[in-house]
Image 1 (tube, rainbow, N blue to C red):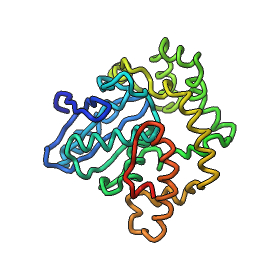
Image 2 (image 1 turned 90 degrees about the horizontal axis):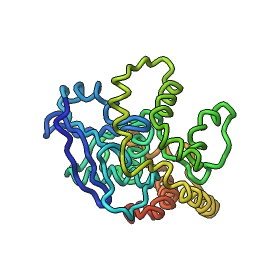
Image 3 (image 1 turned 180 degrees about the vertical axis):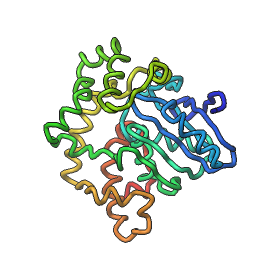
Length: 277
């Protein structure tokens, strides 16, 4: 079982995390998504610890006891902010290189860190594919059935959705669990343990930065027209498993970094100068 929760401070957060396994073991950071929490990894952590890994399972921004240090910090769910949270967590724990594991929000944080700071990533395991969001093309329509699956995202971008999430958080999240995992027969205790991670005074970053996201998309489209955006093949080139294919990665990295810079500038995250070339 994990040791009692610990915490470290970054430039903007006090991040609370669970740790298991030998301190000298290979660091493995397990990043959860929404609407879930660290308890999603409870069945995985003992296996990794037994294999000699040091597991770190943080509460992401907006979850559980993790706190913003300043009331002035935007409650943003932007992917650049999530990736930088992960990098700063590694810095605070004095972890030079780690295996990054994640899905949903946590997977996006892991992918961003792997793209911008590949030297910090020993391996990347992402449960939803390589999911850096192409902001510049986010307005492109999808198939009707896929659009239906996004209903909650449209809902949360309305004041009605913000109010609904505050009033019916557990009801909405329970519905999403059932819709996304129709064959998962979870019990009430499993749901209750995870639901505790949704009680955070910071609210829900994914709904608190709606106006910023709308402005970001407009700005991203403008920048994208002038500078171009990376293709799916270019995104795949950032995966640590593909580092041997270094021939064409430089150009793809520069295009991806320019696209990410749109978000980075919006939240004050500055990647290394070499990444912004």
